[in-house]
Length: 213
Image 1 (cartoon, rainbow, N blue to C red):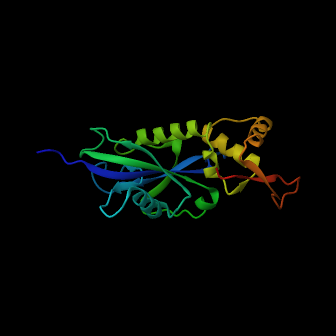
Image 2: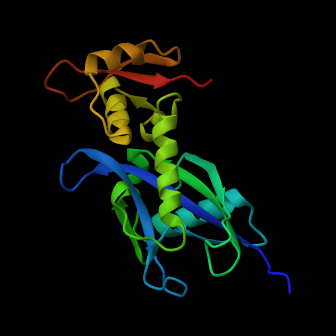
Image 3: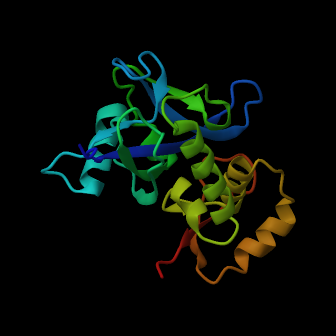
């Protein structure tokens, strides 16, 4: 009898939060503890079977709301994983990734059996989910060097220092502030808003925004 192929949707959700050891912002993601076999009791990425009445992106958004209460602005299909031996049953997973801004992350809730982990320090996960997390991290760290994806972690308005801190947190490097500022201000779509951060005791930093393409 020919084996039936099932379709699932999983989601990698990245937010920037302080590392418990260093205090520096780093990437975190939520995991769900499995309550059934296979891999009973192990952590896994949020997700599940694709329901007949849901399209792919609706399934991903449903998972986001159920596990974290989040509805982030940035949600994109990342990749598909369909290795023959990735599950006891034949399952192909369509993986989305969500990038969460600080104002969105502030509204996060902890769903049942959900816990947030430092993305580079996740434990052994169910199925091939460690490979999926590694793929997502590598993709993000590559893409941030040549695209505007860093702005998915900032608010609508941001300072140059805040933008640099996103790059540093994602890429795990320290960047020269003067060089980064010069490069950022040379970006044709980063424009000054004419406003400044309020409530500072020193010279208030200017606020910028990213013009839509």
